[in-house]
Length: 385
Image 1 (cartoon, rainbow, N blue to C red):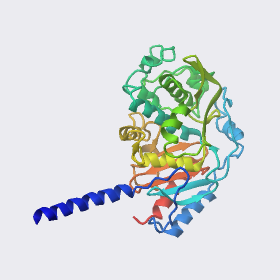
Image 2 (image 1 turned 180 degrees about the vertical axis):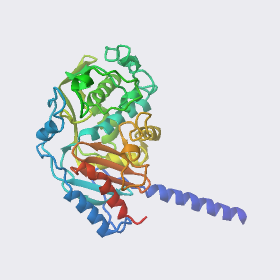
Image 3 (image 1 turned 30 degrees about the horizontal axis):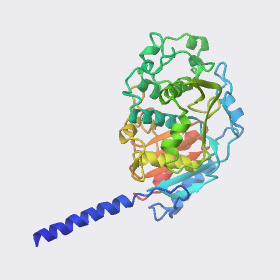
Image 4 (image 1 turned 180 degrees about the horizontal axis):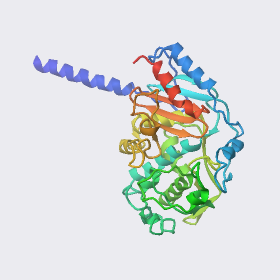
């Protein structure tokens, strides 16, 4: 009798685990289920107010992004648009709860530039290289993999993969006609002083710099030996059911020869044009993959170990991991207590916010960047926790 009772409880437990596993929802390629805000545990009026806030606080820059980019980076010597630029749309976004769409606004199928959100996609391609063993260790010197002189010299030869991923390499040189020192010089002081500054030991100082991000993309192209958009498409975007509309661009002069084939080295953002052009729903799928620790419908597309590394504070900046921002340190949102939230961020108010504690993904497009903390805070305040 006791054995029968024990068997009954074991079967019940296993059935419960199966139901729990089956309850994790993933959208199919052609269908994404929506549920009512109240069904997902939100105050309907509270969530509506959060969305209205996003719509009322549109990015203040011009819809002509050529003008907005050139104005935004006018302090940079020699800055020009080397890659494609597309006029932006209006505010748009989506909120996911437990994988389901609970709210959306604007044109979520419009393909737009996403600027430095691209960096989080680039980081993912690095993670895939690490997962598959193409990169043995993130502390390996990059010169062991890219031996064409890009990492030659006393300083650059010290740079490892982690330094590039955490934007702490202080790589010095020129790539595709763009000089590292000319990218985002200090807002004050003489630019010549910045040009002739001393170099920081790799790994010690965080500096946001697109030339060095593009060095990472160039280095990964040599490791994969095929275009990075192809890697991302085959290993991530197709398996998660992304649309066929997204693109990842480099510059007009960033074509290189690999194994005798001409390939474009893509950029890590739209600072000089290019980067990932994508719609809001595809962003949301990417965010959902990270919310689910790299798993999609039972397939582990990128390892949980990588996601943990990518979303852990780096030595040089508590607020930055492997090209993902963290809600802590100097970038902590005043309105949001949870320091485990991580997010991708790009010029013009483009964000993918991942909140594991509440099983949430929030994507915003063209939100005034300074308002993102308040926007996320409003969404969380509308959730009955």
